[in-house]
Image (tube, rainbow, N blue to C red; front, side):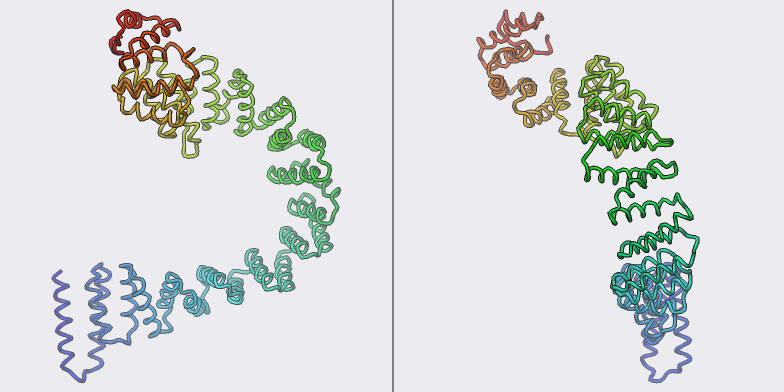
Length: 576
């Protein structure tokens, strides 16, 4: 701080002294300029930007034709995010010293930041004249591309070639420029030059053949493909391009024969086989719409050595789309799963079909291997847990559903995760594990706040404990808003209102329940009991007695109900 004060005083004194002198020795000015400039640099390096600014401003006032002070002040402006002022200082520095590359490079990047591409291109051209900086050329290429300056792009690509030699990307870019400009011959010359640069490269020759095809020179393209395949009969790119040639020249039989040959090959990768098979299926569908021909082709290919497992899945999917007999489709998916036991989509297709058939034993059979093949997919555990639940095996259901929660991640289906926790909550409650049940319900609602089944059960179980009734009412209200005709949800909501002392409102929802049912017949013992309690608290003793008796007739056998009938009065739940 003391140093900054002293420097500031020196600046003031020097300014006053300078004011009184009409003539001043130039060497003395240079000496003082150098002193203050070096002090500014020192302050800048120490992070004392305030002192550095003051000193640089003094230097500029003293010698406004010296570029370094502008440049350093520009870097300080950048440090404090005043890019416009930095831009102005860099421009000034370059105007005072047009040969300093450091100034130009900083102005170049500052111009890019300011989106002044015209200036950036101008400065970049100057920098690139004697440069081998590929990063600079890459930026220049982007600038010219943005401005659609094709001459500039070609000039820059030429410089890159001088430094780095010809490569595929450069050639393709130059070809694209020539294509845009309608200079077909120059585009061809560029590609031919690439082919000649490495005569052993089959990929370059295939590229040449493809260009010839695209430009209506199919005979020449065929000759190129034939040359490649003579040298390398298994060349994937050449074979794929030859198939396209056959299709475009109406030689579909030749295309089909070559496609089938490639599908039977052990050297063609799976992804390419899927693409080829898809094209072949489309061609058959277009010509004959004969699905049996497609299936026969699938079977032939799948019987060949090294058949790709994805083709088995593709066959099953095709049969499903064609709505073939379900047993045949299911058998196809089971075969596909045998070929690739790790395929989650195939396993899910099988599980869905067996679930629709209510064949829970088969759901379990095809779900349990998930721990071996798909240990991180919660959907399989969901099916497994549900299947065990449907055969009343709560222990295994809980076991697998809880196991599934270990694999919840950002990509998990939120609805499924919510349902998993909802079922866990139901099972835990049936086992008397109330707190574990409520914790599961809370997790359920984190993933789907509108999970209606969970909201109803959670609210009802809270009401049974007469606990958190405000929370229970809020949850239950959501259920009747979602399904106003669901009598189970109406009963839960009315009962919670009753427990909160809102007797007339509870009665209103119970009457809606009866209206939905069409009558009060066969509503069930629990609802009859609730109706009796609600009517008695609304002063309708006769109706209360009527419904309590119906509850008893419906199978509700307990001493509390008998006492309510005998004394015709409500007995609180916590005294039952």
